[in-house]
Every structure is written in C-alpha cells, then in structure tokens.
Image 1 (cartoon, rainbow, N blue to C red):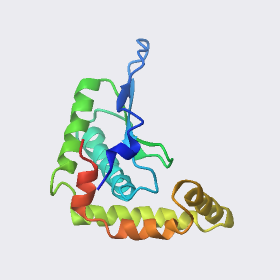
Image 2: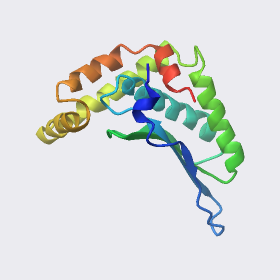
Image 3: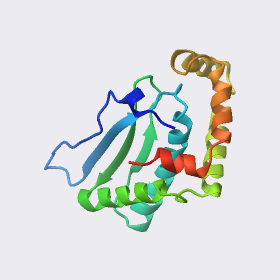
Length: 174
C-alpha cells in the first residue's frame, strides 16, 4: 500500500500559462508520487503507462481532442507524476482525462491482459537499454542513488512481474 505521508512534499497542481496568441493550450499537471525505493512505485509506474496508452485512445483517437497526451512518473527520491495534454478545448479534454483515470482506477478497470502487455513492453525496453556497458552502468548507478541500492534493480523487475490489476488500479486512485 502506498504511504502518502512518505511523499507528501509536493501538493498536486495544474499549471496553466495563458498565451492568447496561441490557439492551443498546453496543460501539465503534477502530483506526488512514490520514489523508486518505495513499494508502491512499480504499481504506479505501470499504471501510468497503461493510463498513457488509454489517454491516447480516448482523448486523441476516439475524440480527436488533442495531438499530444501522456502520463508518467519521474525517478527521483522526492518524486512526482504528471498528466500532459495539448488542447484547443481544455475543459472538455481534461474532463475526458479525469473520466479515463476514474475508469482505470475503479476495481476491474485494468484487465490482466492490459497489465501483462504493459509489463512486457516495459521489460522489453528495459532489457534493450541494458545492451551496452554504459546502459548497465547507468541503471546500476540509478538504483544505487535512488532506489535503495543496485540489488533493488532485480527486485523492481520481480515487483513488476507480480503486480495484480487491482494493485495497479488502486495506485491510480485520485
């Protein structure tokens, strides 16, 4: 279970910068997220990957409200996640995004197949990034500095493989 008190340093916020000469609005929302060493990191990391794909489907493909939409998580000790979108109709677009988050965070919102596909995609990218010596050194250093030691790199892979759809849905709860 996530411990909000462990990463409560960043209150959630939405930053909007008005630029009336541009027809498109660029919205970036931040929220507190667990660090890589936190047990809840893997669930939120994969949940935000699933969400990013679903946002693309719902906001861009199904409704044609944007060209760019994404969600993700950082990899810092004092960490944050984000939701990003470009929109000419920000109210409608953000509403669809929030509805998508609500759908995925509800029990049964993420299927076993969606979770499995996302974990396998993540692991493929991960292993590809370790093909060079510098990729391996960077990953070991990242875990040493941010994730509780280099031995946690393998533990993170195992945590990803053992996630359940309900754990990932719960991590996305607003």
